[in-house]
Image (cartoon, rainbow, N blue to C red; front, side, top):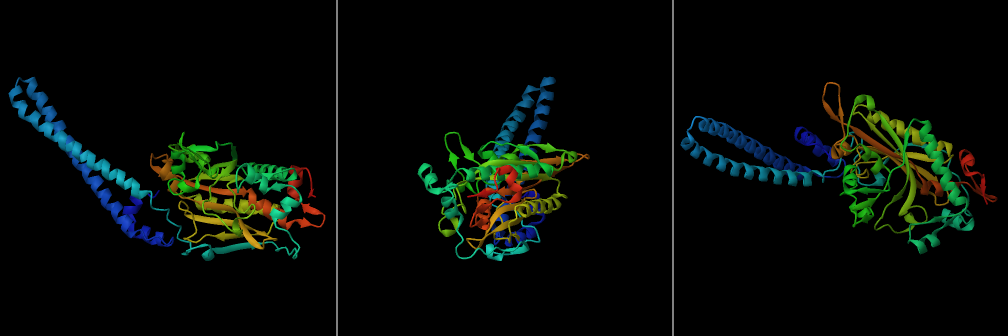
Length: 423
């Protein structure tokens, strides 16, 4: 959430930066400032009335002490009137505050000034590409056919059990999943991340804190009886470990890694781009999260980008890095890099990671702050990235490594999987 101070002090810059997202917030920001003016004026009025009432109360007490109860009577009537007016001012203040909060959460994060203006993925900027794209010829099979041929992924069985988007991994397919999870976790631990095993259910306050609610309400599975949500990513519970927390500069940076299953409704997702493992309702992912001071967050973003790049190199997969334009970044992000791997059979790029800096947007919602030695309070900056999401990684590994003898397992995964070929 943007701070009121930023909105008031940098009004035109906020409007201009949001236009990078194709969002014209001119009218909304004007309403926010008007409501804030009402809230401030009502607070000042209430404070002034309370001060008058307190002064009269002291005067009434002094009159009673010297036996002048008669003179105190009209003053008591005045205090009654002041209390009524104070309650009215308080009600106006609370109403303005409530309406103000409802409008504030409609504003997305400000894109970093370097983010390009754009409307969709077609306007994203390719900033790096590495690896030779394999040419497997016309006989190459897509991962859904490979999964069936080698009996490692059963989409039909998953549909029978739960519905479309819930595949069943079998035999070496299940072991490959576990190998990737353990490889990603071990790599993160070696890089200095601390492991968290988070809950898969969160409350509404946690969803609000990281920005999934109310923006992505329709994309999250909800359990009405307990008012709990299945997590769309481990980012939500891990970042919310620090909701309502005041950190010290020496606590930073905080670096966590977590494996979790992830659940997304993906309402309205149909067609060839969501076939097989390309888009699922349940999938596995290893997530990295960082919390830093404001001056360190963009260095941390580049560090996380390089870390994910290193994972892709070790898995021997052609990849590219895409910097998202304003129209394609998420509601909460200030800057995002997508890492995409090449799927040889589908002949298309598949996103397997998003690494994002949210600056203070999530921290403001969560009331996550840093207290400097001087006592000054600063909002923390939060970052997260997929390191990595498994479904499309598995798709690329299966498709790119298919041979007449079977599917070759990348060298770094052999110690984890216990086999070098799926046949």
